[in-house]
Amino acid sequence: AMSADPEVPAAPRLRAIREAWLERAVERLEADPAISAAGFVGSLGRGDADDWSDIDLLIVVPDDQLDHYADATHLPGSDLVTWSIDSRHNAPRGAGAIGVRYVIDGLPLHVDWYVYPRSQAAWVADAKVIFDEQGLRRLDDTFREHQDKREVQPPAPKAANAHRLLQVSLIPVAAKYVARRSADAGRMVEFVGGPYVSEAVPAEYLAILRRLLVQYRDDAPEEMLAPVSRYLDLAEAVLQPNSPRLSTS
Image (cartoon, rainbow, N blue to C red):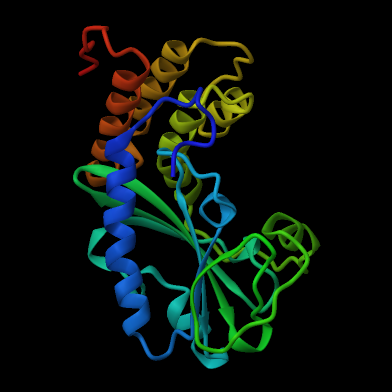
């Protein structure tokens, strides 16, 4: 499928990485007898994903195995994980969610996993089913509406440096907003630790993100920082294809 927005610059390498990871992951999910259903939510579910889109996957597991699967080490691609966070506060009470950063071909890929127990599983209106052995019912609500109506559960306890690591891991997401020239780019740059600049050109936003990466050098391991730096290189090359690469080391 082509990018939904012709203004969004193409990034075929990112799409290829996402598709390669997905092919492997779906094979693993289908081969796991405990996982009775899997589908896409978010942009891949709605069908408006572009080359920069992350993956939102919903899986259905036995009620007594929820905690087992809400853990990156028990999900497909565990050998490629550089960081993960328990984000159960983004799922309804009784379900799990986990944000995971994989590194493929030197670049980061972000996957949000939503892990639902069979007893409360259903498909939102804009989910795209990969497989479903139970024939789950369909809801009228979109994923976003379902999220907004959920009974919120408290976040999991976090280590002291968890917020810094979250900010580092979301720098590529901020760069994605910049590449898409999203109206939310300034807010996202601020969320990952930068100053709030409402109207900046992409090059200025990317320069802020590079400075942040230098600031976070003592907070995050190199295996997290290096792929983020390469992602910023890619975003810069896509947005300014003719500019000479500036060394920031």
